[in-house]
Length: 170
View: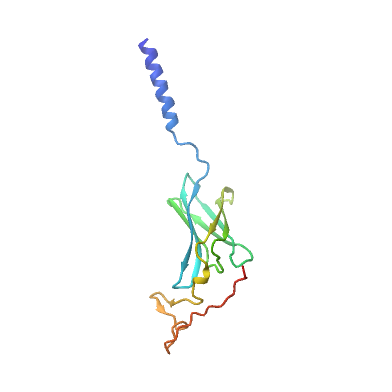
């Protein structure tokens, strides 16, 4: 009788341990953040997306990101290597123009192995809480030590932010 209850207790313990095992997640990365960064000092806006490690990735692995172009036209595509020791992956677009407040912009992320075999796809959108019209038309500073831009801050004391509208009406 004691052997039967010990066997039952052992089986119950094994079943409960099996329930604690990490399930196969299937997707190696998960979306952990997304934002538009407006850097007024250099008069640029960029998409920034972060992914968190959710499982193993082969080495080498790559991430290919397609950002909707706020100015219209073809999407902006970037590709970068994912290093095995990265727990977080940060994706940043080149500078973009014509970001409009409260409009969703599409982002498509493809995770690829070294042979360009598709491992995962992430589709999302990013909506800005600001309109890019708040940005100056020219960088306020130039160079590595943030020297005031002479095209903005003239020797005569006049300031020219050079706001020119080059974005489609929308």
